[in-house]
Length: 183
Image 1 (tube, rainbow, N blue to C red):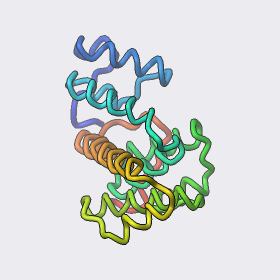
Image 2: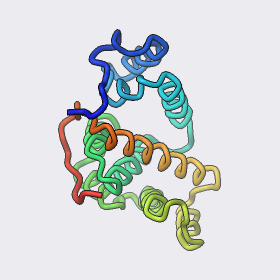
Image 3: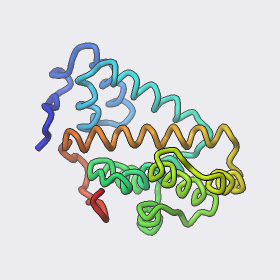
């Protein structure tokens, strides 16, 4: 059970959050508990949805973004995000079970995506203090400086959602996928 009271319905959310929740519902067909949780702060919900929407227009393909989200959820031991991104990865961006397992282990079967996922894990584990060699490896895989900025931002955004959901112990509304190792 969630440790923070999550609005049960969209009508229970703060009125300033309701338009953002309606947009989420239009986009996803439902409003996951995490969005309802974030709706408690209309400013946080606006910021989160705005940043997510902006990153959707970025250079990283959806599959790579999901690979990063899976790896970071595993690093942080976030049951909610691991469950959500396993579902999204499998059903929306069509990652197979082997790829999801690889992502959870901090790698990818796709050589280019592998460099991004490994770099993302290094960022999270080293709290941004990555080595020159780590940065060079992602560049050698063909990622531009702009791509690297986006990878860093995806990592930061996923860490935020991981921390928020672990703080709240958000009720998981996706098929449950426990982390391999607790953080």
